Image (cartoon, rainbow over all chains, first blue to last red; front, side, top):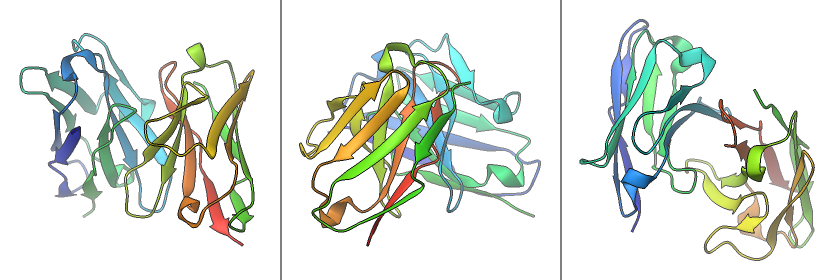
Length: 112
Length: 108
């Protein structure tokens, strides 16, 4: 059974940092592009970042470039999104996905 | 950046009717790498269609996808009560990947 389990969300002040993790199992993780997608409350889906199977290629939406970093550990079958310089507009549910499979998300709230 | 425009924004139908949802791209999508998702409140998106026209595993055959150039369509042949949800198209053919703004399928 495929599982993607996100963790690390929470309440953080503007300008703060958070580290989101996604633990994967049940599929060939080391051969799969991994992605983070977010959804602000009551809004649509927004692609955030992606990383290639070997970690050599990374891509980001413009609004997070220079603030967010995606990485992966194929031995641990996990992907991480390091977020810094957080803004109120980064408040959202953050999902880890493979395009086919999705986790249940972790909520990030940026507020003073 | 490829912009995806979905229409209509909201679609009101009765169970048993046919639903036609549109997703128009501002440029061609490499390898037709476009998917359709269904999302219900409080849930993660669920993959319905990939490669523009291939049904995902365990998706009922009342769901179908088609493409003509940069125009993509999701059709639900006979809408069932459990189909009322928000539908998103998503292109992953080039970076940045993008989503349409969604079509909300509501009960008339």
